[in-house]
Image (tube, rainbow, N blue to C red; front, side, top):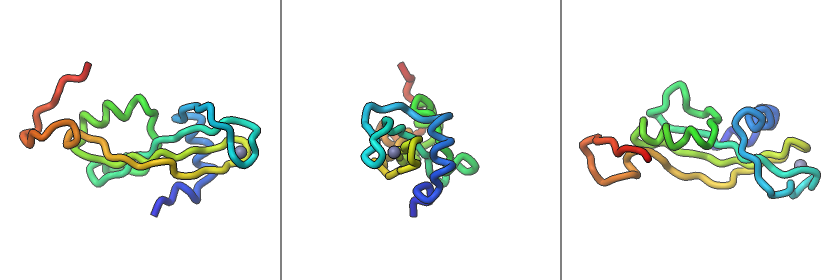
Length: 107
Ligand SMILES: [Zn+2]
């Protein structure tokens, strides 16, 4: 289901724009640390679904949307190795039990 795993060239490029550096060495080539790329998915996102986003932007998106999924993929720029690290759900629905859509103020 996760198509990004078949898109190595795109992933490597996305890591340069949106990636977060890590200190984890690539398990395949061991030449450089892997980068984490965050992808967002969800019906609410419409045109933005399936796009890579900087990690810092996720908190803002979580205030704008009720619910969306985030896929964290690790990518090696050296050999293009990549794999899905984790998937989690963000959004206002996860912040409170209120169903009236009241936004909480971010710090
Ligand atoms: Zn590598």
